[in-house]
Length: 212
Image (tube, rainbow, N blue to C red; front, side, top):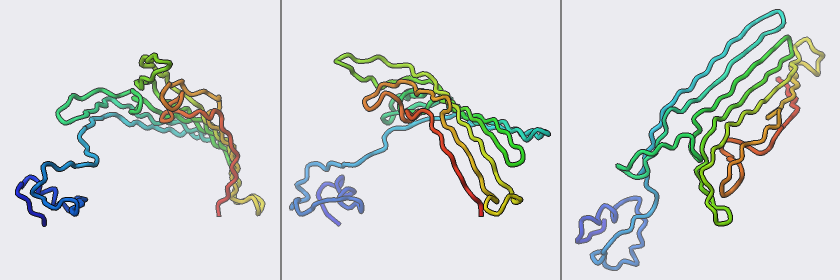
């Protein structure tokens, strides 16, 4: 325990998390100030919204059909930078959550065959980065929504297949099947927003798996 004439210093000097080089302070009573470093969570954030999901299955003689989807809707998103400061609306702005995001699916299955299609949706928002190009500050930019389509086609071998193919699954997968480009979002690092899109275009793959 350290002693000093100023009781305001005692909580800092005796804190178990304090990192003090007392060898450089021969006389604690000579202190005039203590600088406290590190991070402090001074701000606040208020958010509310809805998460909705639904699914429906329909069995027919032509196979089993499935339709469904999920949707996230942010109703309010405000940020307070300092205590007792104003709450600022940041919904649908760069580096914060987009107000609408969803994924919807349509599927079909018959015997070992299956096919699924997915529609991915990211809502529009505002780019508030405010970068400067050749000395000219760019105005805030409206970013369009981004819609992509994924697809999967597969065949599942059953127990009645020949020995090497039992419980074998072969699938062909497509991401961004229509090769949709991401919206242009000008910022200091890229010309797209990596939090809400990617620049890879159409991606396809073949997968072979076996269950033991």
